[in-house]
Image (cartoon, rainbow, N blue to C red):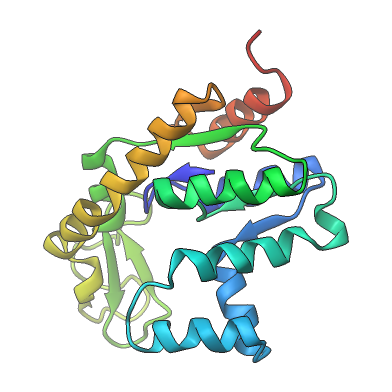
Length: 214
């Protein structure tokens, strides 16, 4: 599964995994579980994450390889958050080739940049309770700038501000598009319009897997 932050890739990966009876393998979950269990791979990953650095590709690939070796992934898996770069895609191909496997299909949840910006930069939090969360598009407050529940002021976290989100997209989109090009060149990529109802996107992705173009 390939998609930018805010495209809904994680939600769709989870839905497809449940529908197809395959494990949903999210790279972030792998890091957290290995770090929680204090595995050798988890301890190595923690050294980078605690310094705010990216986990090296070699270590990330080992984490994925370890997960795909489990019995529940014998028939396949839905990978979410990996590969993020062309070198990671190449490493995944090499990993699967050693196991006589391959990437059967790559799915791109495509959402325009400005739409991603509106999705990611639209969240507002209640100053009285961080559990009261609003969104300019999907859950706006009845009174702009005020919480519906207690009337407290709404504010934006630094990570949710437009300028922060733009910088994040500027950094993450170029390598993602390289992954899209990589799998397009190998005739396994299907792009699906992610700017639709969640159920419609799920159906389109499911058809791409179960009814591939001849």
